Amino acid sequence: MSGLAPERIVAALESGTMRTQGAERTPEERRAIAAFLTGKAVGDTPAPPPLRMCATSAAPAATNAPQWNGWGLSPANDRFQRGAAAGLTPNDVPRLKVKWAFGFAGDASAAVQPSIVGGRVFVASVAGRIYALDLREGCAVWTFDADIMVRTAVDVGDAGGTRAAFFGDVAGNVYSVDANTGRLRWKHHVDDHPIARVTGTPKLYAGRLYVPVSSIEEVAGADPKYPCCTFRGSVVALDAATGEVVWKTYVIPEAPKPTRTNKVGTQLFGPSGAAVWSSPTIDENTSTIYVATGDSYSDPPAETSDAIVALDLKTGAIKWSQQMTAGDAFNLACGGPDPTNCPDAKGPDVDFGSPPILVTL
Image 1 (cartoon, one colour):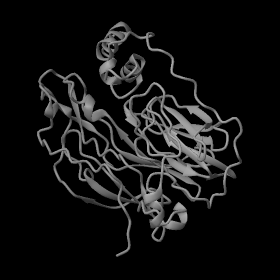
Image 2 (tube, helix red, strand yellow; image 1 turned 120 degrees about the vertical axis):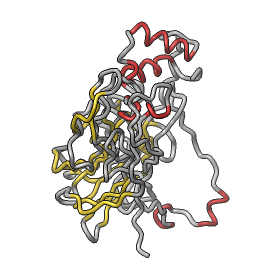
Image 3 (cartoon, helix red, strand yellow; image 1 turned 90 degrees about the horizontal axis):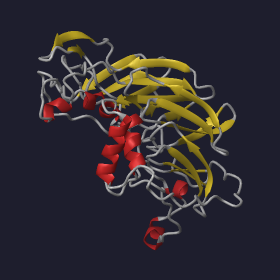
């Protein structure tokens, strides 16, 4: 972690991945942790070089230009790039050379798959900054700062007559910005759970944005004082033009209820978990949306964890589910020094991390 700026560590402890642990520390302690991990005090890091903005930028290219949009490229998430869409042939591949490179100033890692649409490269940094880069030059056309870290790819498409870019952050917010200017169109918080997040890329289809919801409660459960666990994975359908909720479906239909108290007297809850980590898959012929779920966090294990769940595209009603690993209840207490909150049905922790791929056989 010595390559990180201490400000990044503080941000992670205050509002990022480690905010559950950071909430138990004072501001001074969080800064001390950052200094210990990076070897630098907050405020001592040199300012990053200025971002190279485009002096002039060509108008966005036509939507039928070479592109890779979103996570899985198609509604079926097949991730297959056809030659016409790529603007390449197999014989071109060995002759490819680096044209430009872009660095995320102040960050030590990059975790977001770029999207290429209309002559722009849309990508996000772990600091939560969205960049629209000129495909030919690598300069920035515009930037937009989300509230917190962004882990999703950007999905670009029409929304009420405007070309918009959609993405989510690790605080459970979903954004729509103007793809040409970066201006915020709307922002919607998709889940009230305090540590819900959006890690899978939202899927834009036929005027609706389908958002998978996950969380880091599996991490919080390691603390014996934490009332594990109450989060349930879900899918939220939003109106792409306005951000209004069309429907929301929890993949665990049963709400968490008190189950038992642990050895330090903390009330525990279940069922919980089944986070939807990845982008939804859409079957256009049957109006079905498929999502893959993660493990349960607490007892009793849910029947829809570690499963493929099919929902009605229009209403969100669950059509069917197929569980691949039964009895997989797990949180980080199971692998840590204090197993107090580890479920009795301790499982192998085999979440589905990737989306279903829809193919015709």
